[in-house]
Image 1 (tube, rainbow, N blue to C red):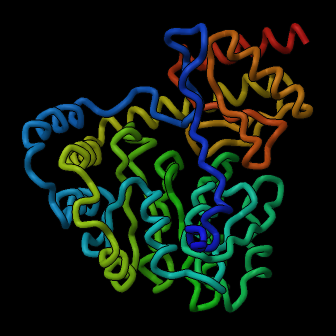
Image 2 (cartoon, one colour):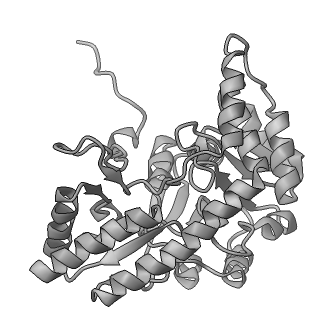
Length: 361
């Protein structure tokens, strides 16, 4: 009898990733506020660039992403030789785990951290280590206390998802300085654009040999469907990641759309302006309804109810109104709902529906 075919250790411990719900029975066009997408979509310049690139779909795309890296570097003041592009920032997470961890080594993340940190760690055969947060915020001291000689990667989402809280640069700097020299601190800046004056940790990356910054085009740039992200890191780390990166990991359409999007500064600025105004209005309205809501530094809010039962009842009420939000129980918040900041009329619908829910309750 032959031995059964088994995957590598750790693979079967991975729970399948669950994305935000997008369909709602009984509603042909529900209001989707479950995936933190830009409600205004891609910029017109990005749409034009993608349409043009479709005509070249018979050609293989660039292997070095030189055009996109140059555009990112120009707009954000980065060194293009220290940029590596991936299929969303998710692929950069996977590259880092594939390259730097394995059996007997640890990948650290906070208790409410992005699910892909744990998934990619297990896929590489490493041990994921969950560190408690304090009042829904990253606890630097707890991370430093838990780090060991086996810790090779520490993932910090800043701003964090699903909490939308933010760790100031002085805390990030203290964390980087306190970690072992053999450990890479990874700053996941998927929502960095939504924090005024925050560059995602650029200076920290350039000052140290063990800090990596990740960014994505899926949120502020409205290109979630294209799957484009990048990492900014010391050249030695970029060299390692490029050795395992597939040569054609990004399509020609994705490259063209992302390059046009990053250069369309006016479109992004307007999207961020509306988000900031509406985020404040949504947060204020939720608090007036007696709901717990921390200050958000992203394009979503985490709304806390009395308990899980009330959160689920509110979710049902919103769905009956044709509104889809996220119940982040799998992220450790059974008593909460995560709501993307939408267009002004979208947020008014949410507030009206929750006011109706609270009134009925």
